[in-house]
Image (cartoon, rainbow, N blue to C red; front, top):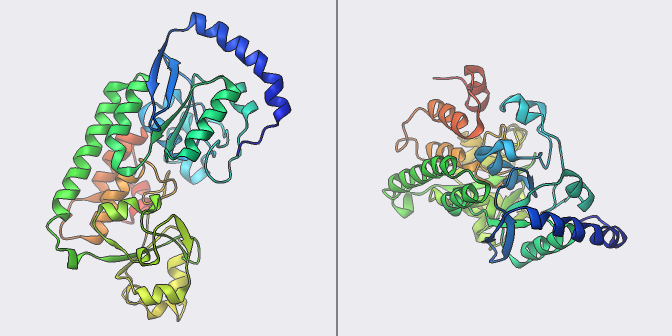
Length: 348
């Protein structure tokens, strides 16, 4: 998965061992157990962190942005507008993990991070990758559980790891209050009254998430029925329009702004009640996706948005004010009225 050569690794290994060995004699360390159960020796003080994938980039940005060395993908201009300039300008470093990994060992070594951080699945495949990169670089690589349900614990664990416990508590407390309040209200809705929802990714809306997909976690959290769960468990998959017609969801969620107008103009999609009644919603995505893309802590604000979309009577709060507060606390930015309009539409 990591594009490096055996020759490079072999050539670097003696130098790395010597350098890290000498450094270890001078640098205080401590031992932690990561989300995969791996025992990792890390510096007692961590100032420079290489994020292995997008969810790690996002959570570190919300928690301790001054420690983030760069993004796995550089923010695009429309995304940069929703960040302080000094963080928007951080370089693109590529990703070490997941699909379409683009970084390599040389890149990591050149940056001299104190820590490589990955947040997401802790399955054996990812633990093995962490071991391999750690062996090749001589740098500590910590893998943390990125499931949405683990958000509160994730903030507390990472805050302790990078030396930001007070800030981590503030964000963890917000996440805990948000989840508890949404859970409490939705618990009043009988199971047979929960909305049936289809999530369509891409411009044609035909990529979706099966039951258990990390991409569908906040849909499950708000108690909605994922109609694609009828196709089984797994991750992302491609379906046909005929299959979506058979499911006939009450609501359609979209990731790509091109999908709703295309569906509304398509005679096949028009057969769906959700399309005819214009119950098709595009999740906001600046600077990070509210529903997905990446499937990280950025979905906390998406949880509030989705609850209001699906249960408007239960969530009468002003989402514009909620959004402004979230962006101030998590994304270090004060939103203008125009930016709120861009995210949510004009105020009513």
